[in-house]
Image (tube, rainbow, N blue to C red; front, side, top):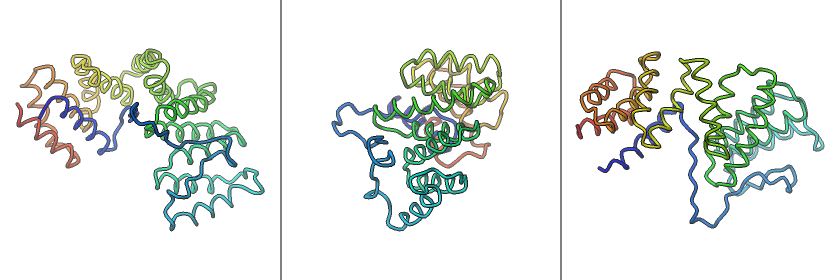
Length: 270
């Protein structure tokens, strides 16, 4: 198997494991079809996804929408919002969930609600495939998060997410600098170390990746993804003895089957 194919396995393993990762952004410039996204010119601001909504799910959406909206006016009903968002998440319509979270925060502008909106927009951003949609959702996530940071500038989780919207958006270096600032402030920050390490892998800077992942597993010895990616960086940097030790360590951790399989495939190449 070629090196590039192994890197694809690495990224797939991270997604399957459900651990910290960079936004899963894929842009297909050959595809002339534009993915549907929130359309503020439409009533309610959301495109009609009815053809994509399973028949058994539609009544749940209708029920919680009726609880949340009264004569087109947003009601202060957090249970209805959370339940509606959960239904949309379950059918992978992250942009619709984010739209309602954003509208709720606009109507009831508390830090808690803006953070919920920012998290929802960020979730939609990480799964977006269309370039225009990625840009729009990243911008909306930043707008919501900036309101949180204005009140709580020490919220490093929010700062991390803002940084990632820049990394895959309009100002990559600004995002990278933000991640570095987080690590300077909190050298043990899991999310920032993981994101910087993964960017090192994606750009082929394996020595930098080693530095980030060694720090991560020093602070969190049982971190499955960090240990796995450290092995990948050792392997790609030609440090095969260390790579072998690292992949063998994976077998002692509570790692998902997909991670164990990928580790075995690397061991076969050493």
